[in-house]
Amino acid sequence: MQSTAFAEPLLKAAARDVTSDLDLSTDEVTCLLDLAGQLKADPARYAQALAGRSLSLLFEKPSLRTRVTFDLAIQQLGGHSVYTHGPIGEREPLKDVARNLDRWTQGIVARVFSQNTILELAHWSSVPVINALSDMYHPCQALADVMTIRERFGTLRGLKVAFVGDGNNVAHSLMLSAVRLGASLAVATPVGFGPNPEIVSQAEGLAAASGASLLVTNDPAEAVSGAHVVYTDVWTSMGSESEAERRRMAFSKYQVSQSLFALARPDAIFMHCLPAHRGEEVTDEVIESPRSLVFDQAENRLHAQKALLLMLVD
Ligand code: CP
Ligand code: NVA
Image (cartoon, rainbow, N blue to C red; front, side, top):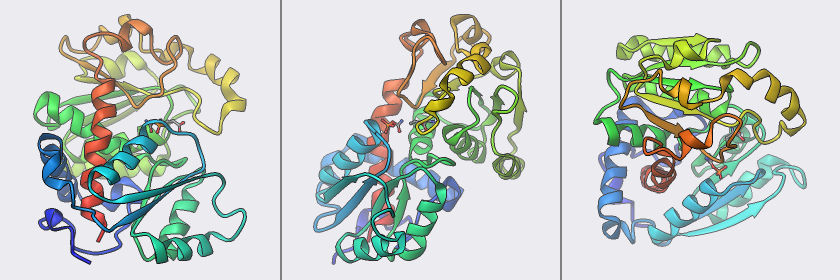
């Protein structure tokens, strides 16, 4: 099968997995963002790049953006996708699922409840496995996020990015992806909802290497003050619905309102992975404001994931 020559300066190793943001090096992320920019500017050039390749899309949880953008990305690169929804590894062991799919398809994109599901698929599959959201990470989201920030400010170096809300999958991936590119991160969560300490420690290491800083606080005003980017995510993630009421109370002071957003720089942008719950983590006024880039982020999911596929799929 012809190799995806467009990815030549990038990864050459077949069957690389992206189980978390850290599976791509900082240089690879930079190359990926450059390629994503080219794909956005000239999509027709890549229309046959995945011709003859098929990918499996396995989703245990609902999705609008991730499902549609992966499906379209594969089609627009000339490939073919097969979508399944439901629990993975219930009807038969995960190791058998992986070893069936790798005989038919050249990559597996999986949205799962547990990070262990991603790791096990990756262990048993001989084709690349891409994490399309787990309880720990959302690396495809983070690629689109840093692409969107770079488009707006030209670079991440020297910027302050504030994340206000749940120290969850989206926060983890944003932390890891932004600090390694030189942006300082300030994460404000309620007590008991902070980011995973292991990921904080990894992000601190990356920040030290890039000259950026990382602040983890319970004070949203401290996080947002002077920020170039203010980012939030839902208070109750998929799978935690039974905690929604308790979370609404715990997070009530963590809403990105106009008054909180006003503490950021005058040219600050608002970001959200979507779906958004207006009146909870963000007000309608902020998400609908001209400084809200949420739909640019959503669009960039397509371009960033196309670049990722070209880098990984042989
Ligand atoms: N942001 C995001 O991943 O959206 P979906 O859950 O709709 O895929
Ligand atoms: N943290 C959210 C992100 C949705 C894209 C969730 O896991 O449901």
